[in-house]
Amino acid sequence: MTGAAGPVPVEAADGLPPAERLWAMGAIGTAMTLAVLDGAIVNVALPVMARDLGVSPGAAIFVTNGYQLAVTAALLPLASLGDILGYRRIYAIGLALFTAASLACALAPTLPLLIAARILQGLGAAGIMSVNIALVRFIYPHRLIGRGVGTVALVVAIASAAGPTVAGAILSVARWPWLFLVNLPLGLLALAAAIRTLPVTPRSGGRFDALSALLNALVFALLITGVDGLGDPGERGLALLLLGGALVIGTAFVWYQARLPAPLLPVDLLRIPVFALSMASSICAFSAQMMAYVALPFYFHDLLHRTSSETGLLMTPWPIAIAVIAPVAGRLSDRIAPGLLGGVGMLGMAAGLALVASLPAEPATGDIVWRLTLCGLGFGLFQSPNNRVIITSAPRERSGGASGMQATARLVGQSLGAAMVAVIFGLMHTGGTVAVLWIAAGLSLTGAATSALRNPART
Image 1 (cartoon, rainbow, N blue to C red):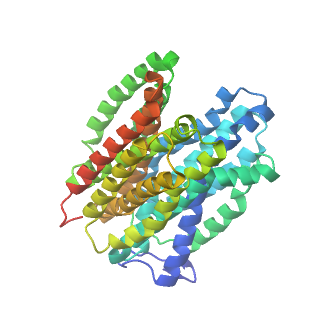
Image 2: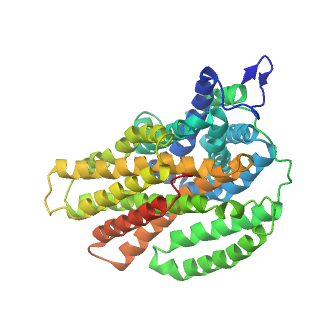
Image 3: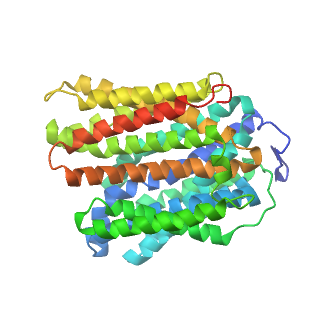
């Protein structure tokens, strides 16, 4: 709610009025679009960046990895700060940092400075991603939370699908710094709207645990770096060592967190069965989707002998289907048990993946398209209801922790999925893409089972 002096608290209110809700979701949608796009569009420009900065392609990869590591490591600490300081404040600070870091990325004259700016940009993106679903819980009345969650899922799906196209369009008329400069006007516009319209939420009054934040960063840095290295036979020994370190530190981290009244890693929320099952479902779903996204271009190009342009077009039905069904699924989850919707969705995705893996040697384009559309519809039917359960099954004052866990599950699932593809490709010289699709179908079935196990009365 807003007044002459700006937003007022909504501690006792059930969401914002419709007009203010629209502006608030516009701010969230714009910021989420920028954060998701910047995780994808830079990949297209890496060869050009490497050439302009005079570095090897392998070194340029850290421009992407630095951003991803910063986002993953900072999600839970910033979600905890959201509980302590208020979600609106963390969101605005994250958006301001993201926008300023975008300018620094565009002006960076060397690779080390560009990587440093990308890390700062990733920290800003983590501020946006860590509390966006928590804010939705206060923007929408309880009976319409599924609608808000579906809107966010729609934004993420569109931004993810549009990433390569947007990058190609910008690079066709401008140099790579413009990939970051375009963030400035949109970021400032979203920041102005966020400050004006996002609700002021209750604060826990707790203290930030710096030791927990450090342990969290170490665990995720070791985990993501180790998982990335599994695909390279020459680095597999080091990767296993890093994963072992992540396991040891992670065990100590969980032990420490279990003894805190308001832990940074919300192990208290994981004791809620429906929350834990929803997190497991999310990791399975995003792992399966990423496995398919990485393997399908190889499948189309190497086994089905499609051209690069055909491969690109064949990849579009999946995200388009998600964008179509996600808001519908969000609205349905306000009236139908989300566990049921999610289970049906993951069964559909599993069936679609199995049908793609079973394609004949020379399938018609239409046969490929409807199978991938089924995958996208299944994932979209799952995602919005599942996110609704994650945020609503947590106590209202722990919305930040729940929101951070939701985003962390997505990123961890995607990282694990990509790593599994790399390992399978390294072990299987032929038939690896088909094996990946079958394993992804199996993960989808696991996600369907964990989703269906949730208590319909509560989910």
